[in-house]
Image (cartoon, rainbow, N blue to C red; front, side, top):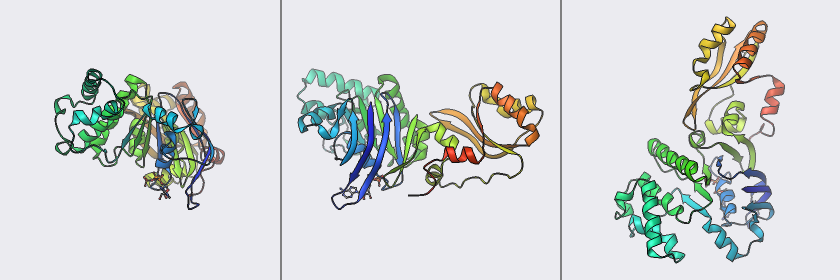
Length: 336
Ligand SMILES: Nc1ncnc2c1ncn2[C@@H]1O[C@H](COP(=O)(O)OP(=O)(O)OP(=O)(O)O)[C@@H](O)[C@H]1O
């Protein structure tokens, strides 16, 4: 568990980089810290393993307040926290095997133990047959797989990924995120992903926090953030808020497009006797699952039938009125 309460950090020159940050990351979570360049994401990530300090508030990792820990304990804690970077940070002269073995060698493990662990991790990341290769002979995606294997050698409870896919093409990004999801599913490790790409958040993360200039603008379930469409999300996506029709009633609807909601519009029209107007939305993938997210417009007199159908189908839906918009975008009105 990572518990962050009212954390504040300023640089020596007085620049405030993190302001009153409060969020919890549960064990086994895949959590995204997302925002534009300079938002403070990497700094917050580095507070988690004590690579950088903070002046106010608290950061409790696995029951320990980071700022109170003596260096020896911080060093011990870092064994429990793996880290992966955008630039891979591999030793170019060393083989894939030696790169992965490095942390265990530093901590003085026996060579049989090292061999067993390194080979099982290389199997996991699909690079056992490249163990004698040097990093220069690998693609970007393969290098990141080596870095992930190296980060897992000490069986960490937490894996911190700082823009780990930002240097990769979309297909390779996707395969690295699949690997992280597989590792998370199999080991229950907590994974915190810093990224500026909403695609990464949608693909891999269950929860997210959007940062703008050191301030949390929106947080919660990824699907819920996309459902609410707060301004901070739209700024990251480079989209505008859809202008809603003044006539009739506007509804937001979410459904699992691979489950019972697969034929949503067909069922809707069959059960209600009319076809709703689609204001905006579409089918998007969240953690490899197709999900329908739509804004619909129906006539006032059809609301009862539409709501009845949506309730019977147990779908997530809301009437979009001023109150709902204010509630959904609380604290997120202006760009920082
Ligand atoms: N050691 C430092 N001293 C002073 N300012 C710093 C230092 N390190 C980072 N900054 C500044 O702090 C702000 C936040 O940096 P940070 O790297 O956390 O942002 P980020 O959201 O991760 O963005 P990016 O993806 O560009 O790294 C930036 O304005 C950056 O220039």
